[in-house]
Length: 199
Image (cartoon, rainbow, N blue to C red; front, top):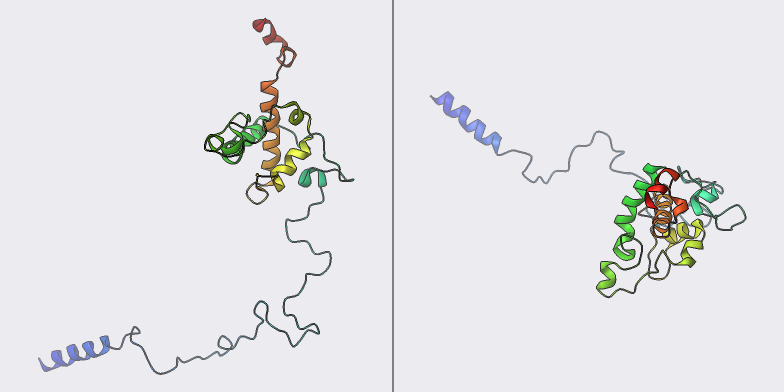
């Protein structure tokens, strides 16, 4: 019985020595490198570099991974001389147009409306109406201009270059052109086999 009481007391004493109790003794560190880590923090003064700055400029010509923008027409909507491209530089497939519609409905329709007339719920709530995509002026504008406006914004419209990737911006441009064409289509735009049913 005494042995059992002794074991029980020992267990209770050991339970009181858990890691959750604060200790006045410093922890034992066999490897000290983690305690002393010489490094520069952001904006700290440097005694190593002649200019005294610890934050260094990248080497000239350095391009971050996946940030090489060598195709000016695709990434900026401008040709080599800086002029806006007239037509979308990617092939407009059904899938790309569907993606453009999806992105348009998410990012553009709250202000421009689902069909691009500029009559949206936000306009009904008092926002200044954006231009109607079906105006002749916007039907004649270069595709590069539409990409530039999506990318950098214009007047009340904020830039979407951080929310929408370049491929999707071109898909939106294609979808805007499809909206414009659907609103202003002629009989010649309809395939010949369907034209007869419309006459």
